[in-house]
Image (cartoon, rainbow, N blue to C red; front, side):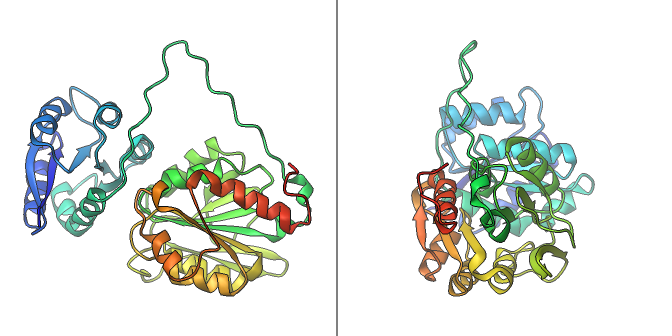
Length: 362
């Protein structure tokens, strides 16, 4: 079996050396080059044709994001970002994912060498996933002076009455999910039912992710807090490193944010969230499984369906990694399998239909 060819791009000689060592210890991959900056990396990519690159964000001579943007337009390929675990690092990483990076690894601000060695399994797993990901060419930047695209027509669900307060939408996602979740949320109206989200993400990144979504969406988006009431028109992101579930308190739904053992090797876990949806919300739940590696949440999504929930899975063609949706579909958990760009509209159609309104009313 051919090995996955990797080029490491990092301005630290120490980091380049450690990443090269970690990659070359794997039987199924090989570091074929290491570059100190994007200009050197550009020549390596041209001459060595790697399968995956790891890319530091902050480097001399050319910013990592600028390089990534050009790369995804001109020579799209799987990229795993190596980010610093800081607020600035989180914001830059989210931008990198928006530009087309498959995933990221967060290295510590201090003790970098030991920290990266501890992350060896995570790094190599993400390189393997990236090597199989669906990569799309980024669109060219808008020409100077070009008119901005027209904003989407606002959609109102005020006429749904009780549906927006009774229903809850649950989203599970992993690799590729930061952008996929955004694509669903930005198409929900301000008076949407509450959305509760588990995206596989480490601590330190989910707050920046929630803030970014809050600035883009009509609904308000925040990192979930333990014990808070779950309200219509709001999205709640599971904090990195903690499980998010829902509970009932009288007539209200409550967010429960707790530590605990990883579930399916993940914390937060989609399985934990979806099982609580089945138990607490039952037929008033709508489940959405988006792109991601593995099977986290697949079994629980079937439990949701058995409890009366209606479930959507993202289709293979629009997934970065068709792992979690495929497993949910195989488990018999999906009511509909749809391209990413149709999911929000179909959810809204169903909400209108179950409220007794005509499907063509807005």
